[in-house]
Amino acid sequence: MKVLVINCGSSSLKYQLIDSETEQVLAKGLCERIGIDGCLTHKPTGKDKVEMNADMPNHTAAVSLVLQQLTDAKNGVIASLDEIGAVGHRIVHGGEKFAASTVLTEEVCKEIEKCNDLAPLHNPANLIGINACKELMPNVPMVGVFDTAFHQTMPDVSYLYGIPYEYYEKYAVRRYGFHGTSHSFVSKRVAEIMGKKPEDLKTIVCHLGNGASICAVQNGKSVDTSMGFTPLEGLVMGTRSGDLDPAVLEYVAKKENLNISEVLQVLNKKSGVQGLSQVSSDFRDLHAEADKGNKKAEVAVEVFVHRVVKYIGAYAAVMNGVDVIAFTAGIGENDALIREMVLNHMGYLGVKFDAEKNKFAGEERIVSTDDSKVVAMVVPTNEELAIARETVALV
Ligand code: ADP
Image 1: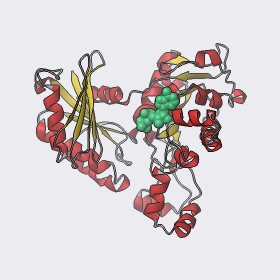
Image 2: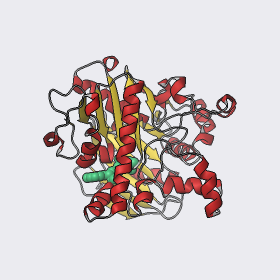
Image 3: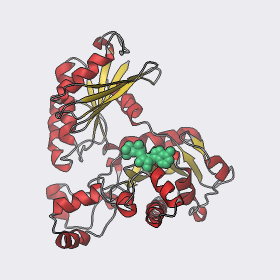
């Protein structure tokens, strides 16, 4: 079956068409500036990349253009839309309602809408994408795959904040966690690589990208994760602050004459290693600057590593041990120096780091020695493939 995977944002839409039998990507692309003017980048596998400006007044127009390109005589990869057997949608927030992927019926979409409050920037955009696809492909089954679902197995001790209980009861204020599709995909792959059942492993997955989170996976289930009510909690990220004393909000608001929303904007968009280094959110730039003697860039990298180290230690404690530490996403897969800096702190857990094996980028591989008690490895994530698999399983 051919599955169209859609990740719809407020003004952008990423897509991949995946052949579920071979798990090959047939085409992928991105619509940007939807509702403003419109720009499409379309890459059919084995053919030239297409970049074009095209009117996209709304998401339906964007999806329509994507479908046209997929079936185009020159740039297309399928003869007709009938070849698309299902559509898998990435949905950011499923609240407490969705602990697994689900077929998108009218009722389900209403339930997702109820979660809009929890993710006001993302869920409404996801729903717009779903509706646009339903309009253009009314008879094709659609599945929703939630970023939060994998973490619904967290026990209350992990998900409750130390605030009045009625805020949880009345407003659903709790930790949800994100990147669930990636943590699930990587932890399953870890079990395959180790030749063990997920039930027999304690794994810490470090998803280190521009957005970054760590997850403790025990018995194949998420038992704790670093992102919380929103993706702002936890690690120091590209532009997000991560954990912070909430009293900083009021203090900075007064000093800078900002309101709460404006301070949150700073914490989401202008903080993290970008804010610390005042140079870049990209680790390639940070390393280059640090090499040139830029102290702020050097400290930003060290702060990032320190927080990762703290969370790994915390999750080894939560699970009373750890068998595997896995790295994934842009930094985790490609940045050998960050892996080395993190793993050099892990001797106390029984990790023997292998600097030679670590010198590579972007591929699946073990980076600890053969006699290491805890296995450290790199497992490239593939959220689109995970969504396609979930979609096929449900339709
Ligand atoms: P997201 O999906 O959250 O946007 P990614 O997982 O694509 O993030 O990761 C993007 C980040 O990965 C970049 O900002 C950069 O810091 C880092 N990155 C990507 N490639 C490399 C590389 N070769 N070396 C070091 N860091 C890299």
